[in-house]
Image (cartoon, rainbow, N blue to C red; front, side, top):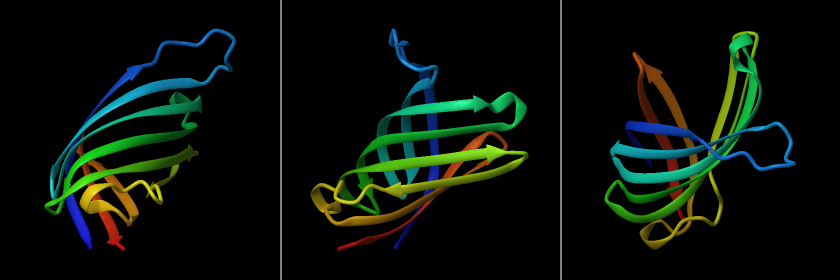
Length: 127
């Protein structure tokens, strides 16, 4: 199955934790529109020098709403790296994270940014 649409994201720096490694930490709030009508909250960790074109991030977000009309929650795990102009991003639905009508969900989410607008495409299955 597939779902497509747009989303809005707000990132806020998380408060630093004394004595922790120098890792960037951001809090995410998202609103999904289209075939996924949901809100999401998550946390992102990053390292590197994005201004110089090399960095990496990981994130977990918890999504709550309706996917193609089915109500429930699920989590997404992000892993992304950019280096020398090349990007590699994988966003996976966390196994076992589905609730409600989304129990047993698995799959991947792809995102794109066109003229500062964020879009998603989810390829998924329900057990």
